[in-house]
Length: 334
Ligand code: UT7
Image 1 (cartoon, protein in one colour):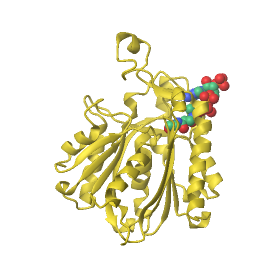
Image 2 (cartoon, protein in one colour):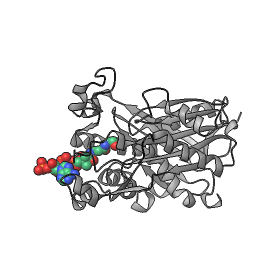
Image 3 (cartoon, protein in one colour):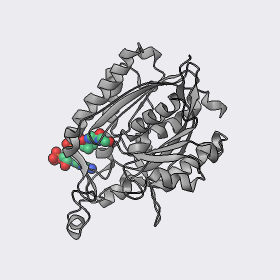
Image 4 (cartoon, helix red, strand yellow):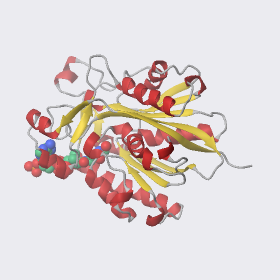
């Protein structure tokens, strides 16, 4: 029997209109465009403004666009998974809220939080439902409103993050395209270096946690950087070796957009050129769960059926991984 694979058959995306530039940030904290560009590589990031607006609002915009582009009726969707670190609420799942806002009524939905690797984990999980033959149309969203948990008085973290969302549709295929392999890993030892101190069950919200500014991203940049550089490159190279993908056979690397220096180091270890790497960090910053699908959204028109693509990410947990897929359609025909 021919094996069923899951193929990405469409991409939708959304970034908020408000642009927070390095110059504006320099008026908020002691930093400069020169420092941010040389150490991280970010020029500007998008911020979701407006009372009562959250991650699901961006996710819903991305899903609406996806349904429109792929001419899919919301009733046909079987499953929706949202990779997210900044859910609308601790519960219910943001996936359920997105489904409600987009008219998806016949699906079950849940969130996955694997830090900046959330989209990789969610895409792999979604693909398993399609491969098993039980689910035919699965939406995987990556969405985060990082501005909700960024401390804009902390210069060590506030330049890094931005808001955004993107979503892909997964459908079954027996052609020589689709998701071929995934390597996913995690090590909880890394939690000390990157986390949000309060708001969970260990330290529920209180006056004390708010006064101590514990409801924000806490990051020790250097250890996270060291782990990210080696682990993201390790899994990307391992994926190339497993499938005999030489640098000339790789169409695109889609790396998590955390730091330009981490992206460069990964590309160097893989032996590929900058032209083979999707990079939009300068415009959006680190949108956590949304970085990988936002790249696919930005580059969709350049993608061709059969393109060899490796996605790679590293994030809080620690979590990291890579996915190898063959693109399923000519992006300029959409
Ligand atoms: O997506 C999840 C995974 N996260 C990551 O992959 C992030 C990994 N880490 C990083 O990308 C980098 O560690 C950072 C971008 C967070 C920081 O860059 P760095 O080169 O590691 O800088 P550093 O923390 O070692 O700081 C170097 C200097 C310090 O000054 P001194 O002690 O040398 O005088 C900092 O106080 O830069 C200073 N500094 C800044 N200066 C201007 C830190 N932040 C800023 C700033 N503007 N915004």
